[in-house]
Image (cartoon, rainbow, N blue to C red):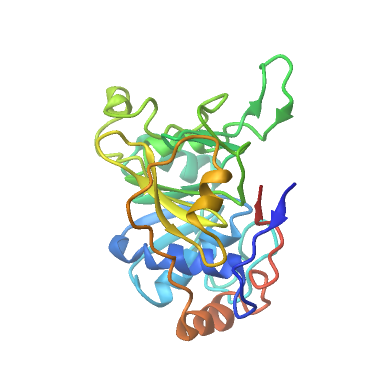
Length: 272
C-alpha cells in the first residue's frame, strides 16, 4: 500500500527537499538552456531556485513560457506568462528545438516506469492491444536523445515503477547498458545523469550504466530504497544522507518561487 513520503520532520516537506537537491545539482550547468513540460512543479521550481542561488545564468522554458519569474508556482500546468522573458510556440519552437538536437543543455522527464538503465515508459503497462495501464503516450520523451544531459524525476518510488525492464521505451536512457545508447544516439547526448525520487537520489555507474544509489533522503534508509526497487541497484559501500535544505534555501524557495506553499503541501509523493 502506498504511503505519503515523509522526511521525518515538519520543518520542510519532501517536495521541498527534492526541489532543493535538484537545484544544487544544477550549479554545474550554469549558462545552459533547458526545459520541463506541463505538470512539472518540482523540477521547474528547482530550476528557478537555481537561477536565484547557484546558477544565475541558467535559462529554461516551462511548457510555453521562457524564464518565468513569478513567485507563485501553479498547482498544475505551466507557470503564468506574466514576468516571463518570452513565449514560444509549442509546435514551431519547442518541437523544432527538440528535433534538431544541441538546442537543450538539459531536460527533466518522468514516467510511469523506469528501468535500471534509465529508460522511461509513458505509453502503458501490459500488451499493446490490452493495456492494464494506459499512459499519456510518448509526449516529448523522445527528446531525451537530444538533451546534452537528462534528469529523471519520479513522484512515486515503488517496485511497480522501478522495474527490471520497461514495457515500452518512450524515452531512451542507456538502453541495454554499456555503450548501447551510442550505437543509435549521437555522443553529444550523454544520457540521464541523476534520478530523483521521494526517498533517494540515484546516478549511473560507469561503464555498466546501471542505476546506482547516490544518497538516501532523510526519513529513509538504504533498506527502504532496496525494498521498493524492482531491480538490483548498485549500492556503494557508504551511502550518505541527502543534505537537508538550509534555512537560506527554504527562505528563497518560499518567498521568491513558491509563495503559496504548493510544495510545502504537496501530497503526490508516495512510497510503496
